[in-house]
Amino acid sequence: MATDSGEQREPGIGKEAILAAVAGGVGARLGGALGAAVGAGMTPYLTALVDNVRDERRRDQRDNIGNMAKTAANTAGFTPEELGKQMGRSQATRLLTATAAESAAKTAWPDKVHALGRLLADGLIADDGRIDIVALTLAAMTDLERPHVMVLDLVANNGVINVEEDPARGIPFRFEIKPTGEVDRDLDVGDPNWIPDWRDREILSARPQLDAAYMSIMATLQRHALIGPSRYRSNAWAATDLGVRVLSYYMDASADAD
Image (cartoon, rainbow, N blue to C red; front, side, top):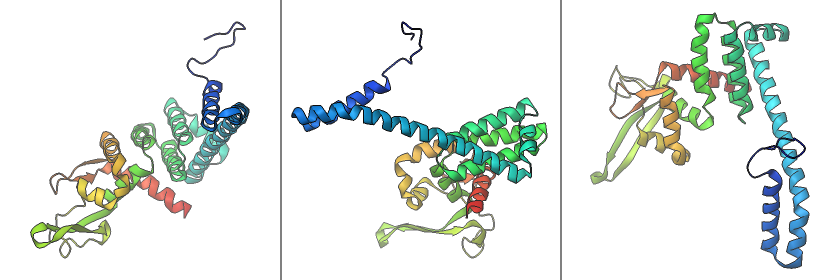
């Protein structure tokens, strides 16, 4: 809305009103004259504190975008000038760059920043036809944070073997986890057609810290077709080709950081 001076203000509750309410709440908690004094004195302090946090966040965003671009240049072997030229060469590369930068600005996870840079490099050196695949991959990566990648890594790179449960014999639900590349299809599972897949109960047993967000995590992975129903076991999930592709960017970024 506009003020009498023509200045535009955002609708809704302003920062000053929120901070005054916080300060007033502190004062009311203390009570009496002391509480009133503390409450009144906290408002300027909290205002400065929030302003400082906002300034720091803007710096974080700029740093993330810069690190993402640096990773893209290093991965593709571009000089800064060459990188800028490739970023602006077409509508597709401009959109890809803007989307990657926006995603990098919104995360606090360094591995995601560098994974986005590696993906952007692939898009900038690709021909226009292949950029579409990179754009689909980017759309998925934009929605992924550390918990999503934890599940995707578990499903794609590890196998469930020796699953057993027999309450009558006092055997609780249990299983072993082996890296996919170390699973012997004959000795470990007795089936040459075995593929790594995971049931919900197994995922939650292996990653119990994700219990509260599990349904949201799985919905995101399914929406972007990064996991799908397994063709080996019923009611189980397996990583798709796109899921493995997306995961590779995070794995490479993590390896670079080590």
